[in-house]
Length: 391
Ligand code: AMP
Ligand code: MG
Image (cartoon, rainbow, N blue to C red):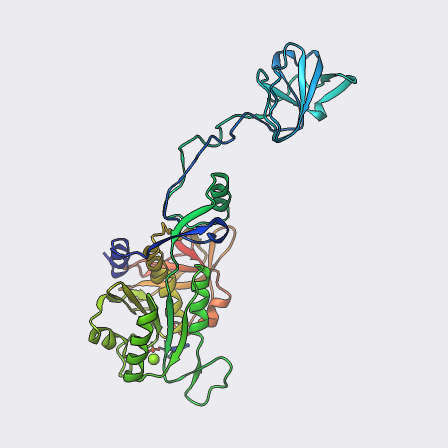
């Protein structure tokens, strides 16, 4: 089992989650459902006309029929058309008792003011039958589902004006590095602009998560410890970038240890992006990502995202596509799972883009997917299948 697989396993088994809260339906979009959604009636609730037309008995289709009434959507008729009788009916209206067919307006001729004939002996029935979409008491959406657009519609249709979801965690983001300046500044010699924060905030935003604090700090043990302690008071989750490695000024692992945090892992077995920590103490969580931008991006996508979704109690299954290599991939050492930015096209062909490694974030501007190269695989030849994850 690779280190990366071990991490995936330990994410599945994490015994933590954030609490549940109840929200008005209109605020539930992109939140994680914390209850099964149950049908409180059949859908459709009645036999419903699928067309504007005439409701009748199918056996009378060849005959001239008397039109008894006009049924609008929202009305419920108590008349029962008999032999050679029908009711004019609108789409969405309840089909009257005794009728087993609605022929379309387009398939009809009015023979006089009160009578009509069907011109299409092969007409479809054009009825949506009661309960054909779902039945009373059926589970419509499972607990743990991330509420997207179709779920919003189903929740509304099932009468869930209030929805139980996971509360939003409070998140602090801290970029560390004495070389960092903000995007508005011109770096002096030895400095670089902080790009990880913008990257990380956008990755969180894609998960519908905001931050309560966004900080950039120099590599100073005392300052980092003080800030960390302060952020712990207000946040559930602190995400660091940088300082998670083994350099002289990589203080994050040391601080976590000193503060008595339980370290779940401190390396990932993926390349780029080996050094990464996850730790917990008293229901507060810390994720320490690499400073290298591509590493940080890959670590978030492959590990932090499923991890945070687990804490949110979401059934999150990242999309992986089995494509076909359109280039020869080779590497010497295969002791880690490799992540390579690529382009996958609509035929499923995977093409290479220039990529120099963990600092080369602008390579990802033209990529639309990450190729996963398994542990112990040194070559994947053109024409062979391979897994990618859309970006
Ligand atoms: P570290 O993980 O702190 O050892 O940093 C690894 C590399 O990533 C170094 O070259 C850093 O300059 C760079 N780096 C660290 N933090 C950031 C950041 N916030 N934005 C862009 N690059 C960074
Ligand atoms: Mg650093």
